[in-house]
Length: 244
Image 1: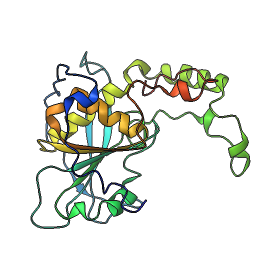
Image 2: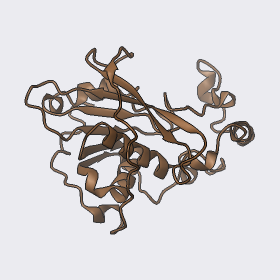
Image 3: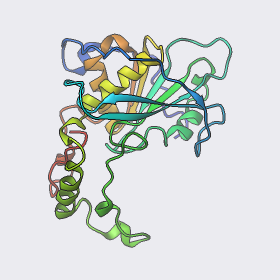
Image 4: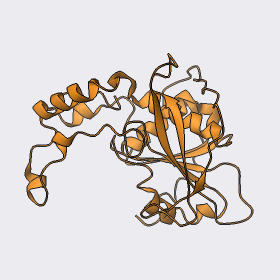
């Protein structure tokens, strides 16, 4: 993965890349700044800062359950720091951006000289109210690679169980991206640089469409079009409610 993002730095955000001009979504005014503290997480640099930021599960209603989002900032290495950090959108959907922070901090080491990297686990993933399905963990070892992928009966059972506790209609890409823009504001960043791979490239496009004024630059690796769906890749499985 050496020099994975080397070609990306000159890519300027253009609203038209996201499929045409649209009204920008307004980020909810953060209730308070995030208290970031030194932390130790596997694979992350020792200077990393961690925090938690709560958002409404139903962002439109702004009532009911709140979701704690896991937030990590990997500070710039140099003293002449620039104000626009990089945010990394990981793939999946379902992977943890924070858990990818170790190799991201190495891959972007040159860029880290003057810019922070900030990471947020999407709602429903990683350390942000994860919606885990024990039925889909699979067997260990080689057999785990031979088992059926996304078996329909287990997906339905998992969705039914999770639906008793959470409103699964609120775990969408749009909601997750609006969460991240709210975190951006709470951290005091005016504009951010977007990096994404696989599903994360789609997430970056959604951010660009919904919050264009918050974007300085965008880069994608193995891009996934905004119009594609996970179902097109796995025809045998029903579309899951998470990250639709």
